[in-house]
Image 1 (spheres, rainbow, N blue to C red):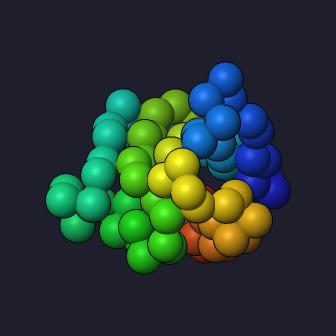
Image 2 (cartoon, helix red, strand yellow):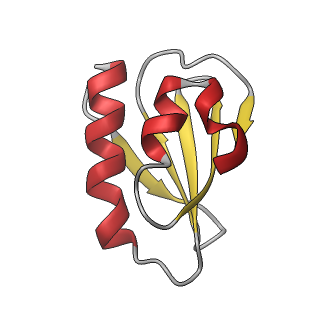
Length: 84
């Protein structure tokens, strides 16, 4: 199943539906991202502030100065590698 990014009411957060159970609910910031391999990889992308995982989706919140065009492709690739 392709990863489906969706806008949320927060312009700095995107919901990525992955189509399989991701566990959770779990929240990560850079300080605890090493607790999860997916979160750890996501924080390798510049501009990510937090990651939330639950049910069949992952919500990524970016720094207000970051641009989604530089974040979304990397997030999609990481999630496809882990959940497809």
